[in-house]
Length: 188
Image (cartoon, rainbow, N blue to C red; front, side, top):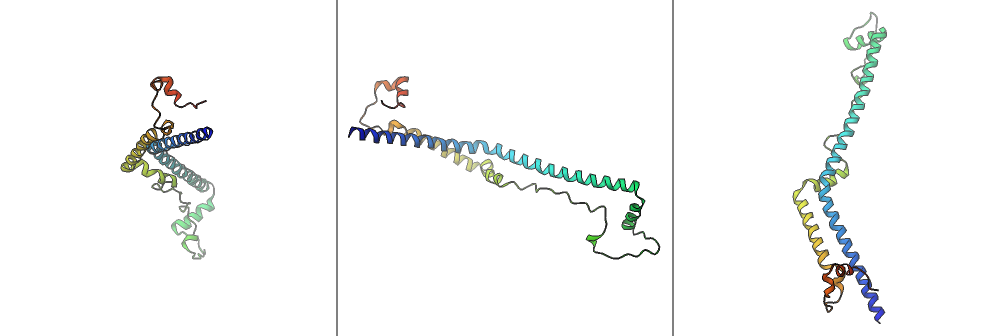
């Protein structure tokens, strides 16, 4: 019967210790969400801006390449110059016949591919999830208060010695540093 009591006390002590550490982990997680979310949001915004700028830069490089080819063609190809003058200024040769086509099918050097840009205001889904924790001061204060109350609860009620029967008096050795450390050691 004495072994059964020791096993139940050991199991209860282990369960309380696990609950204590899980509660501490939850409090640390809540605090870290509040402390790190502004920095994480800044990082997400900077990364988003960087990618948008890179996409714009690549688009502009393609546009420069296309315009460089047009300049080279203007310098070397007289047939291209004639076609371009015919399109831009409506110049025709004698006896040339024009066939009307839709505007989107006509030749034009100014209709380059539009530079693709990412919308500047939209953030990735995880940026929208971090945003309230980084900006909303009322939410941040509530989370910090909950974290503090969780810590107080853990240290007051989830200590392994809190499960020991109240009938046991605190020994004088508990006031010494060795006694305090022995609090967390298993009895042999």
